Amino acid sequence: MDTALKELAVAQEFTTCVHGDAGVLLRLLQLASPTLPVGAYSYSQGLEWAVDQGIVSNFDGALRWISDALRDSMANCEAVYLVHMLRSWRCGDITSAIFHDEAFRASRDTSELRAETLQMGFSIRQLLGQLRITLPEEVSRVEQISFPAGWSYLAHCWGLSEHDAVTAYLWSWLENQVMAAVKSVPLGQSEGQRLLLELSDQVSGHIESILNSSIEDAMNSLPGYALASCMHETQYARLFRS
Image (cartoon, rainbow, N blue to C red; front, side, top):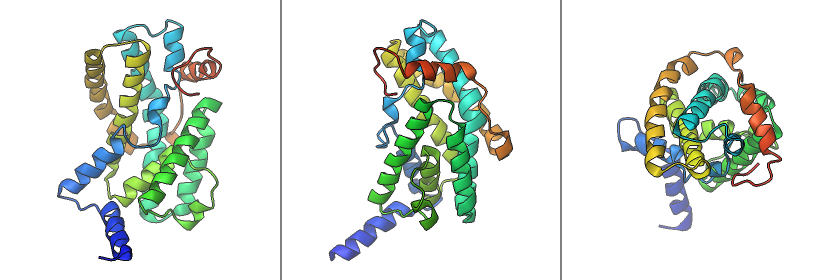
């Protein structure tokens, strides 16, 4: 097989996802994996500052903090934008996808949160190129995209359902937050698994609400979370990026 045919075979492998076989599950696991090379593990989103201030100091504190962030930030805002971006890609409405991306970037409360989504957006854009998945021309002309924009486009290319895509996205975020708590509180690995077990039940409860939310419903409603992110930007000693 010559080089051109090999490249074509690889491209087809990475862009074809057939429902009813293991391909969908495998692509879903790949997108939700902490090994996805976008640098999500390097951010705590203000949790490290909360630990430094003694606001989060044990299992129960970490559970409350992550649960609140899941409900009032991720489920109320970021995941809603993700769904609407995914729908725009599916409809071929690139203008709407770009508009939702711009609106999401504008919704970031702090420079830290904005820098995070842009850095991860850059990384997933690089990943798309390495997987030989081409963004629409209109998007290619956009200098920066958010992480949900690039992630939802990859989910679209791999044929993931809205329900599966949102579940994977929230799980990926949740796993990174729990690992940040394990490292910074610190918690034991078994406590981390208990956190994941309790919080993953909450994820299931948010899915339908997210899928039924209009884009006008998307809003952040967690000022303390934003304040923690602001304070983390200038925290003297940090494990996590800001």
